[in-house]
Image (cartoon, rainbow, N blue to C red; front, side, top):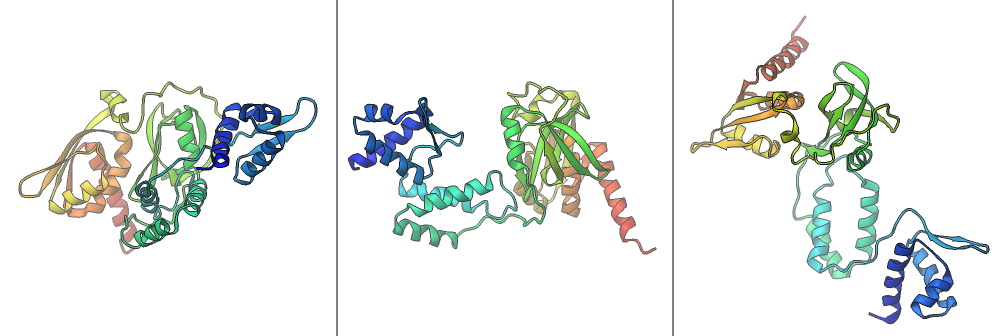
Length: 316
């Protein structure tokens, strides 16, 4: 690495650390002339470092809020792995930080050696992760994720079977299942945890009348354990061989599938009733491959949905 390249990397790290500085300060720290620093800052700006200059007695340079990270050295295998992970998500109609992800990959790809680019281009046509293609959009994934991370309450307009309602919620996180995005959150209108389909969230506002709850320790991996036991019910489902395969491919780790020697299986877990709408439609989709035994409320919901379907398709 040349002396200039090393200085440019160190300069990028320095301006990100200092946030506000003068040309003279940088020239002194790097032991170069102010003219050299001015030229280096110009190159950093062309590379995308968001610098803002202020004139006057107390002027200088300032890094805007959009921080730029210093370069990171990747091996060839690591570079291919990054594109592998990105390529696997391309079937989703919406992703959090989708625009930023595409921008980052373009920058990353542009600076790779030609042979690594060729390998990545070949890789794209050699593997795939199929996800159901969804026409529905989920434009607020980034907002929901940031609200979960920052422990904020947001106001959403939500479209359910009963119409559109306004809810104040505190998200726990977001996750994808069968091409759709879901957001478990505490709902202040129901005074309980609920599961929201992200594509049914029509608008999001930061305006809220409720203070955030302390949900810092609750996340997607443990959310089922923090709900009081009286809020849980027993899920019992019998599965044939095909039902086992379908459940293993779609249901997450909260719904453990037990398998017998003959390939059939069963589910016997404690679940939250906020998952009932998803489970009802899922098990209906399995047809005779699954039979829900309990809870009674889930069985009743499945019957209700089926009766509505029969009524819709009955010749009048």
